[in-house]
Amino acid sequence: MASAKINIALLGASGSIGQNTLEIISSNTDKFNLFALSVNNNIEKLNLIINKFSPQYIVITNIEAGNNFKNNYSGKTKIIVGKDGLKDISSMNEVDLVVAAIVGFAGLESVITALNFGKTVALANKETLVAAGHLISKIAKEKNSKIIPIDSEHSAIFQCLQGENENSITKIILTASGGPFRNLNANEFKNVSIEDALNHPNWKMGKKVTIDSATMMNKGLEVIEAHWLFNLPKEKIKVLIHPQSIIHSMVEFIDGSVKAQLGVPDMRTPIQYALSYPERLNLQNSQINFSELKELNFSEVDYLKYPLLELAYTALESGGSMPTVMNAANEVAVDKFLKGLVPFTKISDIVSHVMLKHKTIANPTLSEVFEADSWGRESATNN
Ligand code: MG
Image (cartoon, rainbow, N blue to C red; front, side, top):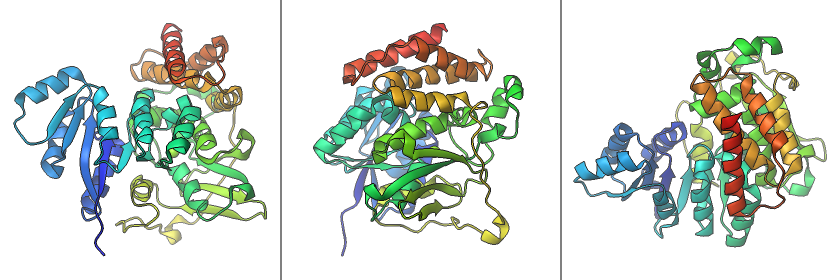
């Protein structure tokens, strides 16, 4: 039986997740159609995408780059300039599924719009759940919209939970590679360079998430993300170092059974699953070679080495606007580090200082979330 193609709006098409998503779409043109997409200002990649996929709509969020492009473009694709365009393409009638691959708080409004319009959201943007998880899960429930995780750990848990009752979960175990500095001592962290921090041993990802992996804030954000996606208290969300990144995460049940999802570290697997759920599709060169692998190792996290992971648990416990502020401060601190303005260890100092200064607002509205985000950014900038 022939079925209609799934029309996709891809938010953040030029980034790492975006590019992997395009690869999945182009290998499955019988299943998926790239209906709309957004880039910030990467016109070179945009041109390649338009030529290959002929989407109906594109959004260029950067005004200057967008207007320049629009003035010189004579093709059929409709062009929307400015960040409100993200909401436009997330709410269009023709769109079935929105891939949220914009990094950071900047992706929040489009995720909320997509869920409000009943779209399925394939979510790569963990920061949106950290900043406004209570609002996002409420809207998804009210509108009966699905959120399917793209983050590899959460995709693993989502896969392990198929057919299970949430009452039988005793804990979930998020695995962490430990990043590029897992073998350093805490006192060696102050001298690490930007290049060292960007050199992730297992995963090829964008800069923000790679730095977050080196500080393990990435895992902290993922703990909060898991809390909202799977409706679990922080006591049931554990982190375990697993240097090979083969087990992407695990779920332990009341009878002691543990389900794990394994795979080579390749983001195409969780992206493809999010796009085709509940079905699976062929993926070339995706098999684990167990005889070459030989061993899988595990160790506990050293929280003294990774203070941001502990801060994330603290933020989750405080709730309300605290995770929003933590995320905002972290985005600013990572940006400062990437610009060479602060040393690596200052990232956690900045986040911790901003959190200490913040007076938590319980149950913030969307406008209070935006205020908390701005406050967190300003405090971190001046820190
Ligand atoms: Mg992840």
